[in-house]
Length: 145
Image (tube, rainbow, N blue to C red; front, side):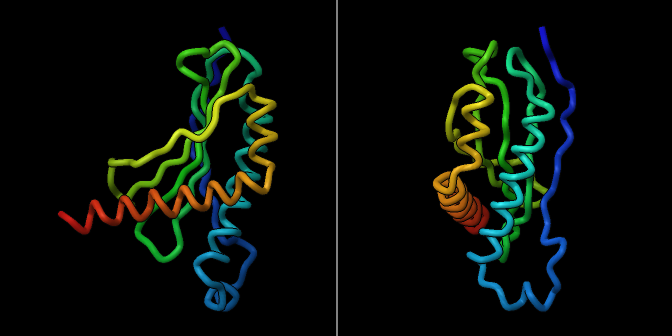
């Protein structure tokens, strides 16, 4: 059995951008940058940390969603039904400092298939749309309390 116990979270940020540049950006432009960074980081981590076969500890990359109190994360983990060679991607959103997460399963496949999927432009749009939808759901939940 091949188990990787590395469960470190990686947070993405706007490093390399000046505050004045950020102030000029729309929320969508900020999201585009964060989604690009998060998917690139997850690809790098998956290539390095995810075995082709067997179980492993989930890896994920997280970032604060611009103009909200929420945090998004994208995770890469083994599939519970077919852990030998199938992996899956999920996207989740939660309110900062809370333990309640709203998530969505995105796709299942081999390590290679998921890495290729993460590199596609269509994925980045789906990632952004899903994060925005889940963030809206989280905001609605907390506004009703």
